Image (cartoon, rainbow, N blue to C red):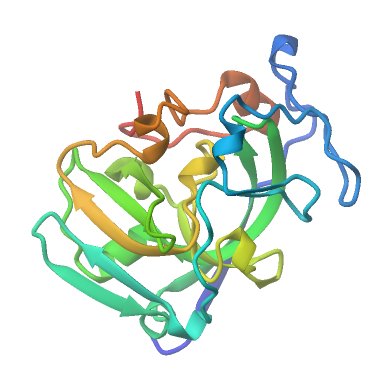
Length: 244
Protein backbone atom coordinates (compact mmCIF):
# COMPACT_ATOMS: atom_id res chain seq x y z
CA UNK A 1 0.00 0.00 0.00
CA UNK A 2 1.97 3.03 -1.25
CA UNK A 3 -0.46 5.90 -0.79
CA UNK A 4 -2.46 7.17 2.13
CA UNK A 5 -5.88 5.57 2.19
CA UNK A 6 -8.65 7.56 3.80
CA UNK A 7 -11.98 6.93 5.42
CA UNK A 8 -14.15 9.33 7.39
CA UNK A 9 -16.09 8.86 10.61
CA UNK A 10 -18.46 11.71 11.48
CA UNK A 11 -19.40 11.67 15.15
CA UNK A 12 -21.88 14.52 15.51
CA UNK A 13 -23.96 15.48 18.54
CA UNK A 14 -27.44 13.96 18.10
CA UNK A 15 -30.38 16.33 18.19
CA UNK A 16 -32.04 16.43 21.59
CA UNK A 17 -29.09 14.89 23.44
CA UNK A 18 -29.55 15.43 27.19
CA UNK A 19 -27.58 18.29 28.73
CA UNK A 20 -26.67 16.40 31.89
CA UNK A 21 -27.33 17.34 35.50
CA UNK A 22 -27.54 21.12 36.06
CA UNK A 23 -25.28 20.92 39.11
CA UNK A 24 -22.35 20.14 36.79
CA UNK A 25 -22.49 23.73 35.41
CA UNK A 26 -21.19 22.67 32.03
CA UNK A 27 -20.11 25.52 29.74
CA UNK A 28 -22.66 26.72 27.16
CA UNK A 29 -22.27 25.85 23.48
CA UNK A 30 -20.34 28.47 21.52
CA UNK A 31 -19.50 29.52 17.96
CA UNK A 32 -16.04 30.25 16.60
CA UNK A 33 -14.84 33.68 17.73
CA UNK A 34 -17.34 33.97 20.59
CA UNK A 35 -15.67 34.29 24.03
CA UNK A 36 -15.58 31.08 26.05
CA UNK A 37 -17.82 31.06 29.10
CA UNK A 38 -17.73 28.83 32.14
CA UNK A 39 -13.95 28.37 32.31
CA UNK A 40 -12.96 27.26 35.83
CA UNK A 41 -9.17 27.10 36.29
CA UNK A 42 -8.10 24.66 39.03
CA UNK A 43 -5.98 25.65 42.01
CA UNK A 44 -2.87 24.32 40.29
CA UNK A 45 -3.34 26.41 37.11
CA UNK A 46 -0.19 28.38 37.95
CA UNK A 47 1.83 25.20 37.41
CA UNK A 48 1.17 25.28 33.64
CA UNK A 49 3.80 26.65 31.28
CA UNK A 50 1.23 27.95 28.80
CA UNK A 51 -2.50 28.76 28.98
CA UNK A 52 -4.41 30.73 26.33
CA UNK A 53 -8.20 30.56 26.50
CA UNK A 54 -8.66 33.10 23.68
CA UNK A 55 -6.89 30.94 21.08
CA UNK A 56 -8.92 29.55 18.19
CA UNK A 57 -10.21 27.02 17.31
CA UNK A 58 -9.61 25.79 20.88
CA UNK A 59 -7.58 26.82 23.94
CA UNK A 60 -3.82 26.28 24.03
CA UNK A 61 -2.73 24.56 27.26
CA UNK A 62 0.63 23.04 28.07
CA UNK A 63 1.93 21.80 31.42
CA UNK A 64 5.56 22.06 30.32
CA UNK A 65 7.43 24.26 27.82
CA UNK A 66 6.71 23.00 24.29
CA UNK A 67 9.49 21.29 22.34
CA UNK A 68 11.01 22.93 19.25
CA UNK A 69 8.76 22.69 16.16
CA UNK A 70 9.39 19.81 13.75
CA UNK A 71 8.31 19.13 10.19
CA UNK A 72 5.99 16.19 9.65
CA UNK A 73 8.55 14.68 7.27
CA UNK A 74 11.06 14.55 10.13
CA UNK A 75 8.75 12.80 12.61
CA UNK A 76 10.14 9.72 14.31
CA UNK A 77 8.16 7.59 16.77
CA UNK A 78 9.82 4.90 18.87
CA UNK A 79 7.66 1.85 19.57
CA UNK A 80 8.66 -0.47 22.43
CA UNK A 81 6.69 -3.61 23.23
CA UNK A 82 6.68 -5.66 26.41
CA UNK A 83 9.44 -7.73 24.81
CA UNK A 84 11.60 -4.57 25.20
CA UNK A 85 12.26 -4.49 21.46
CA UNK A 86 12.23 -0.95 20.07
CA UNK A 87 11.28 -0.05 16.52
CA UNK A 88 11.57 3.51 15.18
CA UNK A 89 9.11 4.56 12.48
CA UNK A 90 8.94 7.76 10.47
CA UNK A 91 6.07 9.48 8.72
CA UNK A 92 7.01 7.69 5.52
CA UNK A 93 6.23 4.44 7.36
CA UNK A 94 3.04 5.75 8.93
CA UNK A 95 1.50 6.74 5.60
CA UNK A 96 1.39 3.07 4.69
CA UNK A 97 -1.44 2.79 7.24
CA UNK A 98 -5.03 3.76 6.49
CA UNK A 99 -5.72 7.42 7.27
CA UNK A 100 -8.93 8.16 9.18
CA UNK A 101 -10.93 11.34 9.66
CA UNK A 102 -13.05 11.74 12.77
CA UNK A 103 -15.07 14.67 14.13
CA UNK A 104 -15.33 14.53 17.93
CA UNK A 105 -15.49 16.72 21.01
CA UNK A 106 -12.26 17.28 22.91
CA UNK A 107 -13.23 17.78 26.56
CA UNK A 108 -11.09 19.49 29.19
CA UNK A 109 -13.02 18.59 32.32
CA UNK A 110 -10.39 20.15 34.62
CA UNK A 111 -10.79 23.64 33.10
CA UNK A 112 -14.43 23.07 32.07
CA UNK A 113 -14.46 23.55 28.28
CA UNK A 114 -14.94 21.50 25.12
CA UNK A 115 -14.57 22.04 21.38
CA UNK A 116 -15.61 20.01 18.36
CA UNK A 117 -12.57 19.16 16.25
CA UNK A 118 -12.04 17.22 13.03
CA UNK A 119 -8.85 15.16 13.21
CA UNK A 120 -7.02 13.22 10.52
CA UNK A 121 -4.60 10.51 11.52
CA UNK A 122 -3.80 6.83 11.95
CA UNK A 123 -5.48 4.41 14.33
CA UNK A 124 -3.18 3.38 17.16
CA UNK A 125 -4.54 -0.17 16.82
CA UNK A 126 -3.37 -0.29 13.19
CA UNK A 127 0.06 0.98 14.22
CA UNK A 128 0.43 -1.68 16.92
CA UNK A 129 -0.59 -4.43 14.52
CA UNK A 130 1.52 -3.23 11.60
CA UNK A 131 4.72 -3.21 13.65
CA UNK A 132 3.98 -6.18 15.90
CA UNK A 133 4.23 -4.24 19.15
CA UNK A 134 3.96 -6.88 21.87
CA UNK A 135 1.26 -6.16 24.46
CA UNK A 136 -0.52 -8.31 27.03
CA UNK A 137 -4.29 -8.49 27.33
CA UNK A 138 -4.22 -6.75 30.72
CA UNK A 139 -1.39 -4.40 29.74
CA UNK A 140 -0.97 -0.68 29.24
CA UNK A 141 0.55 1.71 26.74
CA UNK A 142 2.42 4.88 27.65
CA UNK A 143 2.57 7.81 25.22
CA UNK A 144 5.52 10.16 25.79
CA UNK A 145 5.77 13.74 24.59
CA UNK A 146 8.77 15.30 22.86
CA UNK A 147 8.76 17.95 25.62
CA UNK A 148 10.66 15.31 27.61
CA UNK A 149 8.36 15.37 30.62
CA UNK A 150 4.70 14.78 29.80
CA UNK A 151 3.32 11.26 29.44
CA UNK A 152 0.02 9.48 29.88
CA UNK A 153 -1.17 5.88 29.85
CA UNK A 154 -4.07 3.93 28.37
CA UNK A 155 -5.15 0.36 28.89
CA UNK A 156 -4.60 -1.81 25.82
CA UNK A 157 -8.39 -1.97 25.39
CA UNK A 158 -8.61 1.84 25.36
CA UNK A 159 -5.68 2.25 22.98
CA UNK A 160 -7.26 -0.21 20.55
CA UNK A 161 -10.55 1.68 20.41
CA UNK A 162 -10.99 2.71 16.73
CA UNK A 163 -11.46 6.35 17.78
CA UNK A 164 -7.95 6.59 19.24
CA UNK A 165 -5.66 8.22 16.68
CA UNK A 166 -2.18 9.52 16.14
CA UNK A 167 -3.31 12.72 14.45
CA UNK A 168 -1.34 14.77 11.93
CA UNK A 169 -4.22 16.95 10.68
CA UNK A 170 -6.76 19.27 12.29
CA UNK A 171 -9.90 20.84 10.81
CA UNK A 172 -8.84 20.18 7.24
CA UNK A 173 -5.26 21.47 7.58
CA UNK A 174 -1.99 20.40 9.09
CA UNK A 175 -1.80 20.05 12.88
CA UNK A 176 -0.39 23.30 14.33
CA UNK A 177 2.57 23.08 16.68
CA UNK A 178 0.68 24.66 19.59
CA UNK A 179 -1.94 21.90 19.36
CA UNK A 180 0.60 19.09 19.40
CA UNK A 181 1.82 19.05 15.80
CA UNK A 182 3.20 17.42 13.91
CA UNK A 183 1.81 14.31 15.67
CA UNK A 184 -0.43 13.99 18.72
CA UNK A 185 -2.62 11.43 20.40
CA UNK A 186 -6.42 11.82 20.26
CA UNK A 187 -8.54 9.98 22.86
CA UNK A 188 -12.05 11.47 22.52
CA UNK A 189 -13.79 9.40 25.22
CA UNK A 190 -11.47 10.47 28.09
CA UNK A 191 -10.44 13.81 29.56
CA UNK A 192 -8.38 15.95 27.20
CA UNK A 193 -5.15 15.52 29.11
CA UNK A 194 -4.93 11.91 27.88
CA UNK A 195 -4.54 13.22 24.31
CA UNK A 196 -0.78 13.66 24.56
CA UNK A 197 0.79 16.32 22.32
CA UNK A 198 4.05 15.99 20.35
CA UNK A 199 4.12 12.19 20.62
CA UNK A 200 7.58 10.70 20.05
CA UNK A 201 7.51 7.40 21.97
CA UNK A 202 4.98 4.63 22.73
CA UNK A 203 5.85 1.95 25.30
CA UNK A 204 4.00 -1.18 26.44
CA UNK A 205 3.89 -2.26 30.10
CA UNK A 206 2.30 -5.26 31.82
CA UNK A 207 1.11 -3.13 34.78
CA UNK A 208 -0.32 0.37 35.15
CA UNK A 209 2.57 2.88 34.99
CA UNK A 210 0.16 5.67 36.11
CA UNK A 211 0.02 8.82 34.01
CA UNK A 212 1.53 12.12 35.08
CA UNK A 213 -1.77 13.75 36.06
CA UNK A 214 -2.48 11.05 38.63
CA UNK A 215 1.15 11.04 39.77
CA UNK A 216 0.97 14.79 40.42
CA UNK A 217 -2.46 14.36 42.06
CA UNK A 218 -4.04 16.78 39.61
CA UNK A 219 -6.70 14.24 38.64
CA UNK A 220 -8.06 11.12 40.31
CA UNK A 221 -9.27 9.60 37.06
CA UNK A 222 -9.35 10.48 33.37
CA UNK A 223 -12.91 9.21 33.01
CA UNK A 224 -15.40 11.85 31.95
CA UNK A 225 -18.26 12.69 34.30
CA UNK A 226 -21.72 11.45 33.37
CA UNK A 227 -22.91 14.98 32.58
CA UNK A 228 -20.29 15.30 29.83
CA UNK A 229 -21.05 11.83 28.47
CA UNK A 230 -24.76 12.61 28.31
CA UNK A 231 -24.52 16.11 26.88
CA UNK A 232 -22.03 15.25 24.12
CA UNK A 233 -23.29 11.69 23.49
CA UNK A 234 -19.82 10.28 24.19
CA UNK A 235 -19.61 6.50 24.42
CA UNK A 236 -16.83 5.16 26.70
CA UNK A 237 -14.44 2.57 25.30
CA UNK A 238 -15.37 -1.09 25.61
CA UNK A 239 -13.24 -3.35 27.76
CA UNK A 240 -10.98 -2.57 30.67
CA UNK A 241 -10.51 1.10 31.70
CA UNK A 242 -7.00 2.32 32.33
CA UNK A 243 -7.81 4.64 35.25
CA UNK A 244 -9.76 3.87 38.45
